[in-house]
Length: 134
Image 1: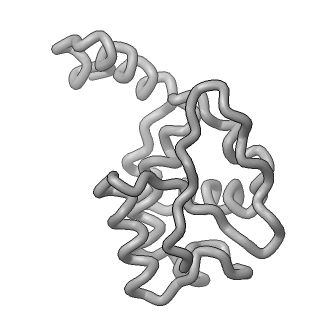
Image 2 (image 1 turned 120 degrees about the vertical axis):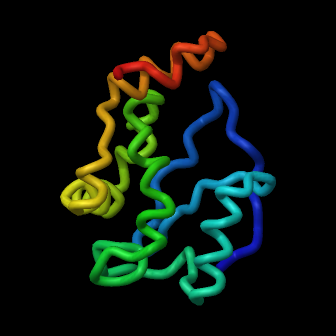
């Protein structure tokens, strides 16, 4: 796994482009403890970020902790209007579809409209944000 970092993307930045065949891209921010958690698990398990994967899930042929750890961020892509981030990643799209079929994930799925409603209220610093959709 590469320990290198790239500069941050900002609004209006050019997208990073398609991921070369046989590689995966890990989006993180070096100061974020949640992103660090993912990098730590990958490093501890000896799972290199830039290798050719022939499995559906990140840890192999079956769903594992690493999949659950990163799923919440991918579940929110549509609500955050970031679906284009995965437009050129067919393997990641297959992973997302497989994750939605998992009983634990499907039991806790929140639709994009509900997430968006929560986010809109949260950004307005509304006390009603956490109760949105109840």
